[in-house]
Image 1: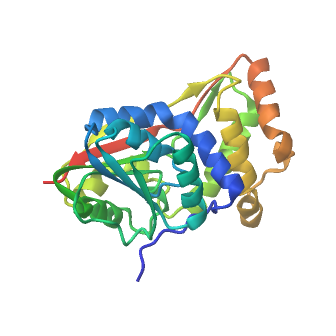
Image 2: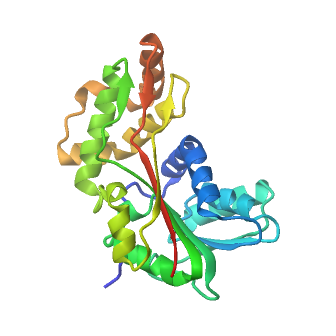
Length: 272
């Protein structure tokens, strides 16, 4: 039986645009992960689930001209976009590949294998980590960046609209993702996959009215709305998704509030 994940947000242009907003939002955490786990110049790195290529380009920057990145996704459309964006950004050390999650490139073994926001979508996250470890050389790095979806977000002082959107999305993800709690179980996931207990990052992102948090929340709501309606999750008072980003920005600004995301959770270990 295939272990390939079902990506509930789809692969069309609105989702690829949302992923680029998301990448800007979480970029600093991902950079910290790459720095602290030891990815650096000259390495050969495999990226699992590249999407439109934002993490691929961070990796290419980290390994430099003497290193290389193999980045894959199972859908041609995001891979084609990632290729175009990387070319325009001047990265020539990334090889984008279309393949499935259960057919990772592995020869020769990689210095590091990295995935961002992929384990939550997997039918078996431990199996995914195990496959990642098998693609790494002995002593190589296995690193994943996930999110603790069960932890509540906060707006301080409270902004009712932001909190309603967050609660609505949280309910939908809890019912649709096979492992929405994986961000809280990375230690067990790594150890069950045969890796040492990992090093960890647990870090939330705070922002104000002009933060990428607002368009990210609005676009996530827009794309998830068909699922929300199908599941019967109450959402009527959130209003028009086309104006949601602006309304969020205005209400957060009026409250002079800061908003805090769910924690970003990163784990990394070296293959024995």
